Image (tube, rainbow, N blue to C red; front, side):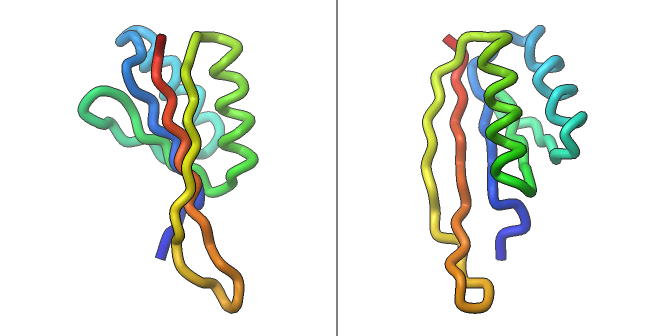
Amino acid sequence: MVNHPCIVQVRDVQPDKIEIVRNMALKRNAEVEKAKNGLDIYFEDVNEARKFISKLRKSMKLRIKMSTKYAGLRGSRVRVLFVYSLRGL
């Protein structure tokens, strides 16, 4: 079962900005994991992730892609995992 309904993958961002992104995510009570060329940020609330992405877009140039995956059922409701991929330009 999915604990976090939203993952934000930050890739190809300048090394000096990675720490800024990490600190911004930690302020929003997100879990941050280092990936091979960026960060994976796990949010419990999709709207919180969207606000985070909006703030990031104001501070740096990013290309954003969004996808969804089936994450199972909770009761009779379908759960969806949102994955946002952010790439630096």
